[in-house]
Image (cartoon, rainbow, N blue to C red; front, side, top):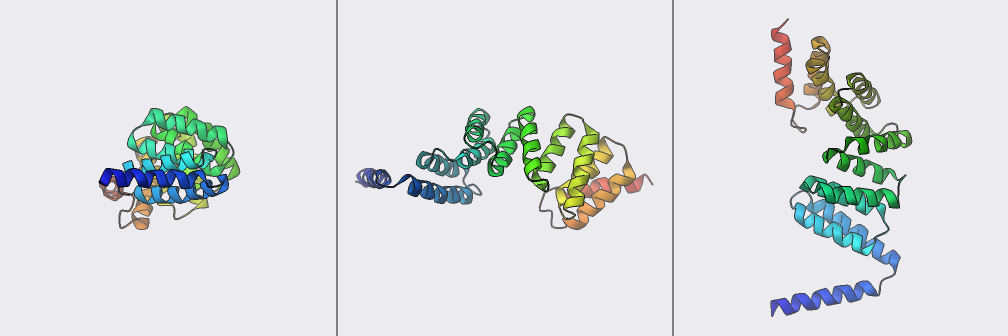
Length: 217
């Protein structure tokens, strides 16, 4: 009996969708994506299903594919994530709401050469995008281009003095790679001041590093 009711509800849903205009379907897709964003905090599988439903309703929206790419990357579905990212870029290659999520999805999949030019395009359109610049700096660090990484992190700190993650990344870079302990101490101490509740999860490591620098003075 339960299966029959579910089947009936599904039929009614698809019948109702069939009578909607494309504009109405895309509006419903936006609502589905809001639901997916909520679900992603606790149930990634449900979020993926909701995002898939949104794409079925509005398959011409590049932003939907971009968000799907991030969910798939979080799930470890990197091949599928890359496919969603490519479709997002095909549909809307200059939309900052596509470039940001797709760059992150490529980064998570280890496709740094794919993410790099997209971040450049995004920062050209939005020079003060702190998350994009942070991600670019992290790619430079992975590629061991430490000077460019330092430059991007310093830009972030100048443009957004309360953006905690760049202080931690810069302090860690100075300590581990550039061997500038005094600078490391300064930026790590600032990070500890800005994130005393450990929202980013780096507080213990930052404190350990600060103590290590103090012990060498």
